[in-house]
Length: 615
Figure (tube, rainbow, N blue to C red):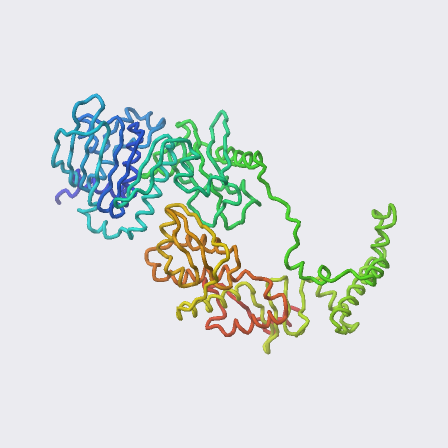
């Protein structure tokens, strides 16, 4: 039998490596920007055409390369960072494995111009698919100018699987943002299809955050600064009110290298416990400096995942640093002394305290006990049940006066049992509909009893109402008295711009206002004022994680998000007529049994099951 194992050619090996390192245009952007940073550049320009598919160009004023180094830089595993195996554990630069340029050259057409400050002329190299086409002297300013053209031109299958221009540009913006945040002392410029998107001057971290993410973050930044023997932590976190329902504004840098780490993210989120809603995500940009020997950065091709020598120690230090920063700047949950709207509607709050009610209250056991000097701590426990029944009878007589409804004495025990179990019966149809714990409706039917989840029922009703408006293209829009601005990160602004026509079709009147800011002039009818930003946050968050085949279902998701937000109205079902209207409208829906995400809206409990529960 002939031998079947053979060595791969360099060309094929480079293309395989490119599959790990260069997955999309943003991957090449990341590698080229990091090379420019490692070259000691103080000014870096990024030029993009057609979301990086046609051109990615990075121009820097770094130290440049000699003709020999320029040629060697495209060889696999050619690097100036590693001389021995020990160097792998003391890495402080961005690139070090020597795979980036070789992988890029394997799937693109590359032109490199570079010159050292001490040299009179530079070097120009043209490479296509790992094959060097040209190497010659050229005139160029000190530094490096590298152009990557026609990504995946020789791997059509890989090019076919690239996403839309908006999606790919958003990924490029992600990488540009991370590198620019990690290096505020370097000036950056970003051009997209001939238009300058960013012009960031060298400065401090705060000015870089504002320049990249918008002025809205300036007033919500809380500095973090902790120095210990094992690690140093510095950067900024956001105030609780800056938390959003979208991920993406969370950045960790270990020794100036961007990383993803769910464990460290949990340490930050846990420090915000009780300060933000569970569905919200805090804003943070944190730099952790630690001995490189305690971190392994070479565990993933993109170098965005790392291993720590002691995860628990990192967690504890980070969590304590965030809590310290929040406490130092007096950021704590404030006490709200305003009454809940549901309480404000009660007759005991609204109706005046008459002389007759005052007289009845003064007859009560508790009033006499607490008003007698020195008796507050000696409340009698004997006949306590009788005392509480006395109080209940006083309250009952008050209800009778207000509603003119005679409650038979025989029903007193049943009413008391109802109060003790947390259930409220409606005045109208008390035997037919019952509100349980403010979230479930119980109603009798011929075969037994039905339990309806109120919020889910409202969600289903609103979804079908919105779907009908969408199909008829007649969604009413409520113009706001004072238009509100809505500022997003550059990446999220791209997403929202893409779906603005769909947003208009469900009743939103939103217009671009500046580079990454929008102005909200109208909202869907029925959406409470102030809720519009939460709805937009949820929509943007969904778009971030939308799969490629989900574009056709985007309408359904938009309507589902809207219905979910509109279904949080508890006041509509506090009155009996509202409860009955909810039930009637639910069973007028085409699919009353399930929400849009498949959760049960109601359950039936047969009479036989109820009797079985009672033995």
